[in-house]
Length: 332
Ligand code: NAD
Ligand code: UFG
Image 1 (cartoon, rainbow, N blue to C red):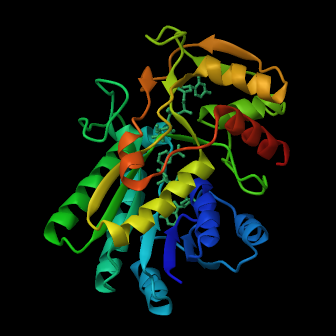
Image 2: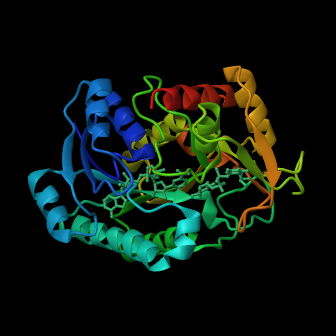
Image 3: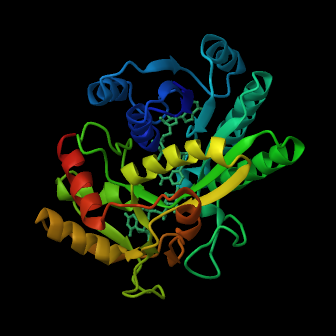
């Protein structure tokens, strides 16, 4: 059984990937500092998987702790989710973002190298495409960033490419996620952000459950089908399964690879609201407000490369995403 170190494994995408890893007979070791997750996720993971999760509480920047983890476990591969991810916050606190995201990745890679563990999956983001000059977005399109969060993702991609150039025995997978939503079918784990949500779906579910009064739709004058922003929403369980395919590729097709993990479908904010209302038979109060600074009109993936190479594609529908997100929120 292979041992996979999952950094940020109690977070939203990490926890769903841990479930898929156990389902696919991997053994999991998690490190997380709970800066954006809660210890109860560990109990939920045990309830879902009926397996013991080995957990280390701490910061991925801490090389002493990382060395201890590698000493106590024979790690085959690392999936690196840990990081700060709020775009707006990154503009206000750039140093925290560079410190946390860049330094943790450097510490991790250094300790992996010391231990001759060279299989690495990185949580990158569609944000590295900046404002795309055509759609759908393919992996070879130009890269740029519009905020410090995006810059950390792009810088880490550059570090990983340089590392690979220096030593071709690394297997590195840069997975560029589009917009994950939804949750595991048990509704035990899901997206549970602290404070007022920044993202669309967590906001919609709070309006649906009466925890927030009204959804603000940020602009209806974009050059899109109905004027509201268009994104590629992907069910988090599909996204998690993509990581299993990526791990399997390390044996079959070693090297550095880059994949978009999206569905290829773009939905507008209004389409999201309408679908949510229909699937859950509930009305969502909304009003149109100013555009949000830094937003782009449309962003959706070409998922062709990842399908061709890994035979992975998203299976779940927008209806599944809307239903699951609402059910999870109702249980909170
Ligand atoms: P999340 O905040 O739910 O999970 C991240 C986890 O990492 C949290 O549990 C947090 O406590 C932990 N963490 C952060 N810094 C740490 C550190 N230095 N040491 C130890 N633990 C640390 O976020 P998520 O949505 O699950 O995202 C996971 C990854 O995917 C992130 O790197 C994020 O940038 C990337 N990503 C997310 C999205 C999205 O929309 N959710 C889109 C693209 C990329
Ligand atoms: N939106 C609203 N009202 C809200 C929240 C969002 O109208 O209350 C709109 C936005 O303007 C945008 C769409 O809904 O048009 C999606 O916005 P999100 O904030 O949910 O997602 P983003 O596409 O802005 O960004 C997310 C993550 C990034 C990640 C990116 C990858 O926040 O970290 O997806 O595509 F990089």
